[in-house]
Amino acid sequence: METLLIVLAVLLVIAALILVSGFRVVNQTNKYIVQRLGAYHATWGVGIHFLIPFIDRVVAIVNLKEQVKDFDPQAVITKDNVTMQIDTIVFYQVTDPKLYAYGVDNPVNAIEALSATTLRNIIGELDLDATLTSRDIINTKMRDTLDEATDKWGIKVNRVEVKNIMPPKDIRESMEKQMRAEREKRQTILIAEGEKRAKILEAEGHSESVILRAEAEKRQVILQAEAEAEQIEKLKRAEALGIQLIKEAGADEAVLKIKAFEALAKLAEGQSTKIVVPSNLAELAGVVTALADTALPGNEKAAKKKAE
Image 1: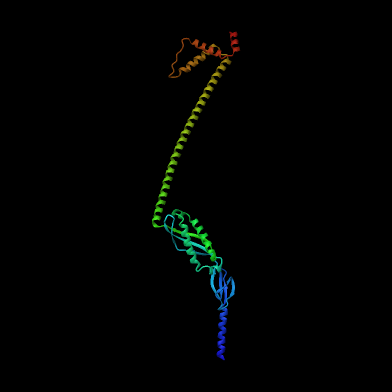
Image 2 (image 1 turned 45 degrees about the vertical axis):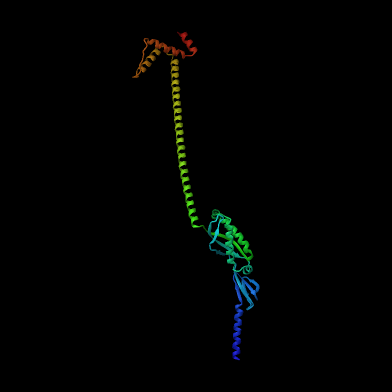
């Protein structure tokens, strides 16, 4: 009797353990694919679920996070028959856990194989230069192709990036020489343009200097001419004023003779001045008197003759 009770207790403990082990807690980012008697039964989401022992079975736990897969470099041949190594990175996310579990065996390997074939097809349509400068085009074409192909597997390809493009060693050396030659060419052009610009600026500066010097000389000549003209004008006005004063003072012949003598005395003061003195100084006074009379108006001349 005691043996029977022990056996029943053991069986109850085993049954309890089996029942407890049937409970499953599903996390936020996971999905459980459950089969019942070998056929798909349900997709469990977040929460507590009970798995019927020996009848239900979890066949797959699917991660819904976006995942990143860095594939190994692939050997590809360009349109101009250049072999190179290209490695890519694929960003994908599971959108349908059921299709992901039942659509294809080992989905990651399937994506890698599909990525390699797609990359070969795209690079085969491009030459070497286009391959090196068209990463965005390659990324876009690969993403579109992979996204369409993996849709039936419950996978969404969000992004594809070409990580590295490695041409053969001889091609790399040739490209480095070409880039070095281009840099030296640009440097030579820049130096030549700088020297050309410097000479142009120097010529322009010299031309502007000549023009400014000519303008300054022109202004100097104009100012000098204006000063001389002003000086002559003032001298003539002074002479006219002197004649006017003599006229207004009513100078007679004796005064004019004295002025003539004073003028001759001033002329004689110059060291290098040669003076020819007329034999009759009275004639010189007469000339001065005649000049004074010519400066008189008509009525004053008549009055003077009447007085004489």
